Image: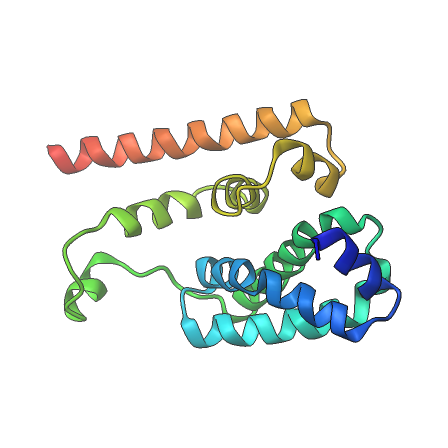
Length: 173
């Protein structure tokens, strides 16, 4: 059964359809939570919490064909709330070295660059490149014209590129 049919049935109150919908998207939800929270246990807890929230609010899903996007959005909002509450600090290179993690800093550099973006820019990058959401779906999800989404995405990528290039020049010196 496809997403839209499952979502329509879930909206109508079919618990089995809701469960099937959640099982279909559990991996995408987990990856989203892990990308934000950086911790397997927190990510699993986030999936549980989002499942509960989605179950409570499934009747508010207006467009069943965007069920996955709707679920991802709930996850992103939940993760943002958790991060604001915890006020987590970014890992620095010294901490990584103390823990004996490999010397491949690419992931940390990308994370550091992502932290330089606004919440909106990070969400755009996440939706487009991590969740592989189409520009049209992002536009509908955020109630923003497609052209505006493209412009904002372009600016976010430009900021990322600029930050990474700047850091690269500093390290080469």
